[in-house]
Amino acid sequence: MSGQQRHREPVDVHLILRRDGIEGPEVLLSRRAGNVYASGLWHLVSGHLDGPHEDVVDALIREAAEEAGVSIEPADVRFAVAVHHRSPAGGSRTGMFFEVRTWQGTPGVREPAVCDAMGWFPLDGLPEPMVAYCRAGLDTYRSGQMMAVHFQEPEDPIAYAPALDRCRFVPAVGTVGPDTRVREFTERAVGRITGWTDVSWAREGSRVWRAHGAEGGVWFVKVHQNGRFHQREVAAYRGWVPELGAAAPRLVAADESLSAIVITAVPGRSLHGAVHPPVEQRRIFQRIGELAADIHRSVPSRPSTGGITALGKLERHLAGARPHLGPGDEDFVRAIAEEAAGFSGLESGPTHGDFQLRNLRWDEVTGSLYVIDFERSEVGPAVRDFVRLSDAWSGRPDLFKAVMDGYGRPFTRAEEQHLVVLAVLDAVSGIAYGPAHGDLELLERGRRTLARPRVTGRP
Image (cartoon, rainbow, N blue to C red; front, side):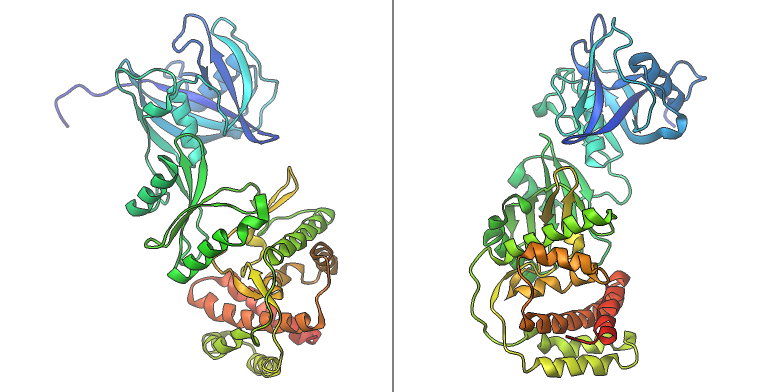
């Protein structure tokens, strides 16, 4: 230890009182007034610890009651962010920001001598002018990070100024963003990024981040596993995807040397694992059918160019899947393949290629459906997009009917035959790929898909 005096600084607490608004999450802010620091600026309900007897949770609850008139239970307090702050005057402090979503009472001004207004503001639409220190905490919170350093310079204003944003995130374990080249590529496209959140799928090779801009914008950055996936996704975004309108992201930038893209964000939550009442499910699945029709009609279809191309990969996939197949599975697969060899081709057009619930996002507020992830997009028969989706309607004829109602027409006899063959081939591929890459969900889905035509009899 050096011989210098130990560093000491105050600790303060900040309340992120959060509710769900019409356009997304909202937070409660108060406007400082009177003979106080940062008078006229918006700030969170906040304050200092009241002596050595008070811990940070007790202090937060006390300040919430004193400033806003709300009552909070300790069990409803969640730690959100820590900010090490230095003001333009040179004083430093550590701020502890806590999220609260459940409380009693109606928030309102309780200390009019130091606060002249209080209101709810969208988390993605914070007001101005705002205390830069408070803005740093909320920007850190919005980015999904848990800590930041916010050391201002002597000439900096107290109010937040985008050109003088001193917030520097300190990533927690497991939240580091992409490498320097991808960061630079992203910032050349959209400006300075102040936070990265890893939103990759929990599977080998998935590399996707949510990028938070200094001005409040949000984008997604994706690094493809290989050049083929990159070329497919870029071609889709530059080709037929714009015909989907607001139902899909937009390509902002692409770098072939990095196999990376920057795309706009779309609302909603993934339908993968989501639970909805039956009536809502049918509504969603009808919209899924409508979206599939929009994809397949985005450009005119082409005449058939041959049979089922996936048959050429069967032996390779069987070799990987064989240890995980059940008795009689391989014979069944080969019989299906032999029959399919004589099928005539179907008209071809744009297909998503991975049209399943995990790549579909549903906005419950607006009732809008969005589709993402076009790296497996290619020209093919329209029925290709129902292969993986069929697992979602298995055992639910009402959901299948809803999809067909939305699609606007039933499958033809030839499409029904192709769907069974393509589903069997995709199942074998999944059974081979899943165990080799630690994706057990893909393995089980493949087993379910393979079992269905064996039990029900293939069309």
